[in-house]
Amino acid sequence: MQYQPQPTAGKPPQLSLFEGLIAHRLAPFADVARAPQPADDCLSEMALSGSGDHCRQLLAPILREFSEAADTRWLTLIAPPAMLSQSWLRETGLNRDRILLLQAREIQGVLELACKALMSGCSHTVITWFPRLDKASRLKLRVAAAQGNAQSLNIRLGN
Image (cartoon, rainbow, N blue to C red; front, side, top):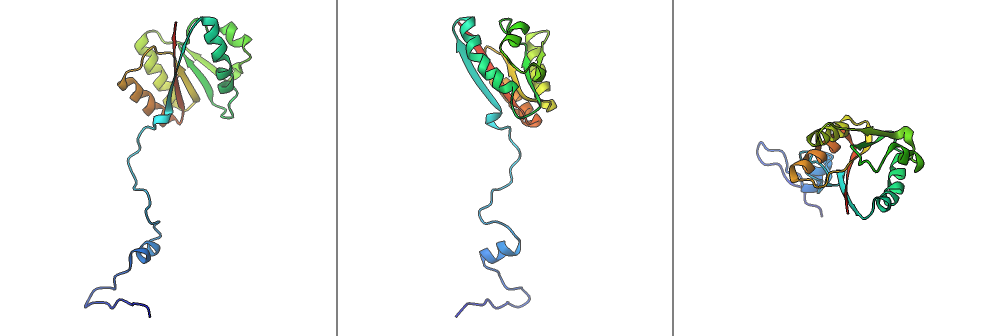
């Protein structure tokens, strides 16, 4: 025998929890919609130390992989260090047709330039070379990367 709720005077019958979800085509335990937050995985950091030659050897396959990504947008290098010269990029076998090199006029301009490159959506990855990133700068890069559906990578070089 199945229980059938009886309508009370002037009120429709009450549906069980799952009948109500089915009637409204809602999934039980569905995620509650939240305001979009910048994803933590939009920004990565890598620290390399040692001689310039050693660092370039480590960077070459990483940059090559980014330059040959399936995503056809740019790999953008913002103010790369002098050791990553045009000739080195050419010799390393990177896909130079997919790399964009941008220089800023001052250190604060580097962050602004990186954020603009990320927000534009024209780059799949934007690489910066900040020695340190404070909390506010990290947040700016994450928000910009999320807006442009891109990745931000900061590489810290040290001796």
